[in-house]
Each structure stands twice: as C-alpha cells, then as structure tokens.
Length: 120
Image 1: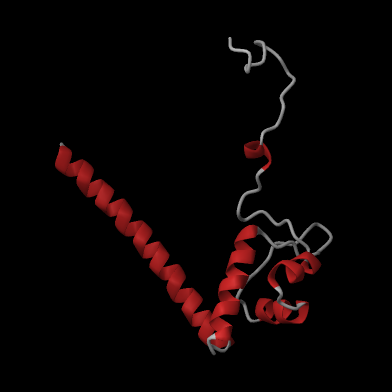
Image 2: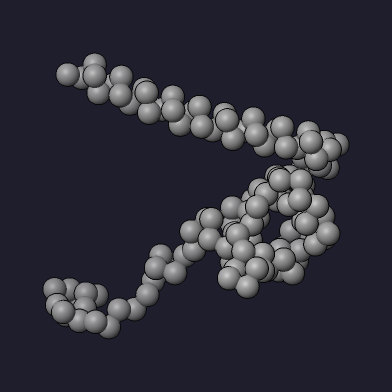
C-alpha cells in the first residue's frame, strides 16, 4: 500500500475532479445562467426550443436545465444564425449533421468488424 492509497476497507473517500464532473447531457444550468454564458437572450432560447432546435431537460418542478451539450449546441445554432440561416435552415443543417455522425459511427463499427474478420 502506498501513502496515497487509503487503508483496505476504508470508507473515507475523497472525491476527485473526475468524480464530480457532470455528464455532457446532464442538465445543470438554469436559463438565466445560460444567457450569461452564451450571450443569447432568454426569448431567443425559448424560440429555438419551440422550433425544435434543442430540448433541454427539465427539473421535477418544470424548470429548464441546460447541459454542457446544450451549451455547445446553442453556440453552434448561434453561429449558423449569424451566417444568415433561418430556423428551418438551421433545423435541416442540424438534422444532416446528426445523420452524418450516425453514419460515421456505423461506418467505424463496420470497419472494425471487417478488420476482425480479416484477422481470423
């Protein structure tokens, strides 16, 4: 046992940064914090949500709780809007990007299967 390891059977666990890091999809931030972090006003956030561009999880009380993934998506939506895309155009781009990601994932999986088959 090293000096850094707790004694066997010890229940005194000191959390590390890895222990408390939220998942990317975990709803953390209320809308007021998101407006501060992104510079996007709350009405625009609500419009984009109504348009189906994002769907932040809600707390048990019904309050929107934006995740880190939502923040990244909002920044991406904002960039697309600043380039002149309207909401339907943004929706198409996001849908196509999601499809592309899914196809890339499937392609990687198939390549791995093919590689394993060739090694036999």
